[in-house]
Length: 352
Image 1 (cartoon, helix red, strand yellow):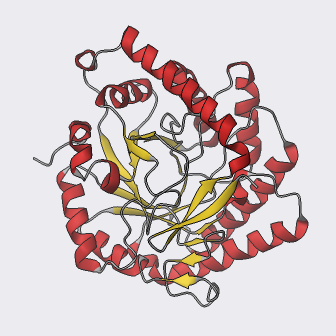
Image 2 (cartoon, one colour; image 1 turned 180 degrees about the vertical axis):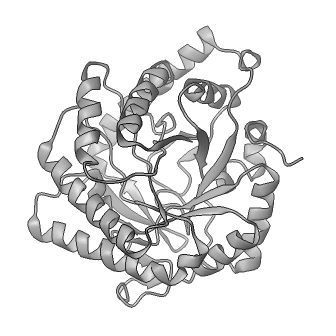
């Protein structure tokens, strides 16, 4: 197990397990030094002309690994206030991260299937507000960190398949209020091929895909995997993803650029986005970029992330300029909408 569950002001969040903290800190420190040196040597903010703008954002009931902006008790009017500000900044698309979390034992809609979880009515008022603000919504379903590791146990795999299916079936109650589905279990290439993990994740993704195509074929399907870069394993990276997504009609791939999470560094950005472009062309999917607007300052706790510098975000946008169709980001409401994020607002188009 690489995580533990912390609780802050009544909110459950994922925290790194103590056994991986030392190694994780080394990797994060190395990535931050690499990025800082790159920015100091090569980049000035004024050098970045004609950068792509960010026009979408992930939203959530509450962030899974920090407190963030909790919306558990929000009504439609509260969502309208946030969405009005987002629309003013040129945002036309939101992605709700997950309707239920297995490890947190939380559900954000009224569910019979997940009745043993703590529940809040978050999704319905959010969707109604999004429709009023004319936002495109990708609705995340069942979330589980099983997407981040291998499912060797057959019983666990069957449980995961059932949870995905029932969650998606229940969310169809709101089908008129969203345009696409986001496959919430995130994963990433770990540096070497793992055919068993690829097979298990393909079964989960394909089962969800098949249910969606049967119940609501008009809905778009979106993924946002991590971008872990291994320069000597680029062919394995491409082949692993094509195998994992075999027989799945993905409409939108919006990979995390993983700069804030320190799994990829700024000098590697153009290379990994070239690889993502190759993969999405093969899949017949649209390629978006999920730009991480945060920087890690701690491990665990209520607030381990802060807004990134404008110089760093400009370089992230420059790295994807030639390859992606659209840029979205992680949690505008926490990293941009508050006073601490004011400097990042330049990357969002302002409504005319």
